[in-house]
Image 1 (cartoon, rainbow, N blue to C red):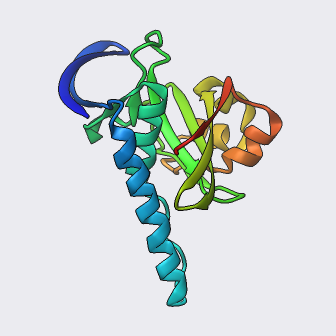
Image 2: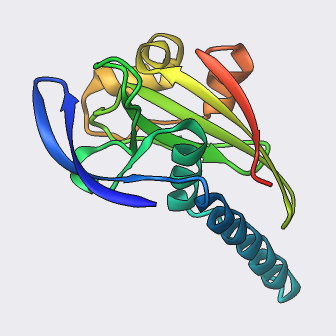
Length: 183
């Protein structure tokens, strides 16, 4: 992986930001991290515990690697990745995910991103990880999700919480769907 500073053009300004660009060989680290997480969960189950969630940082890195995005290494911006190939106004990416059949995603009450990338994982074993990536424009979410739009227009500072799968994906509300395997 390459860490460097880039000047990103975001609405109304250009700012210097630390980014991470993933390289071909980074896939091996991502595969190992996933296998280690699956193995840890198996051990947790043996002692009667509930499995841990897949770390968001892993999902952000995996999506950035597979989609050719730059992972933002700067929390003050309010989005996870930057799509260098998308036009301005469509390049700031927020990432959410689910590892089970259902989801309940929470969002900041202030939107600083243009597109939501939702990742739906199908975890079979430490050596088998299939996932779907859904690309959803913010306007689609505001127009089609009754709960999300109501929270955003209400401006009470309440964090919107929606089931992306139920409210958008199952209804076919997305720009693009891509399928990947980690291994």
